[in-house]
Image (cartoon, rainbow, N blue to C red):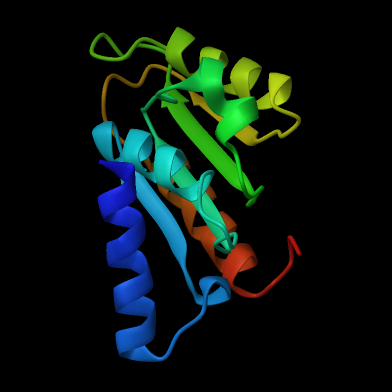
Length: 135
């Protein structure tokens, strides 16, 4: 699905007169997967990728397919029984193997959802990404 999302992003950026520096891809669960799959394969990097309780699809192919290296923040609950915490660590390992990295946070006692700590971290990350702090 990422090629379709990539084309949609280009269309909407043009429609609203924005650039990639005006965009942070943010998702929860499957939304994180799509944000990572799309954001890392775009020709021009977005300002950031904020992912909650997700995974990195195609991580083993990432080194060959990655075209951009936007800043990434991953937040995951340690009690997630839908996508266990190991999925975040797999994503981090695949990012590192591809020559990229990510900031990350573990929300203690949190199941498959977003906690207050994650919201605070996400808010700060998105603000910093859109202000150009990570460039």
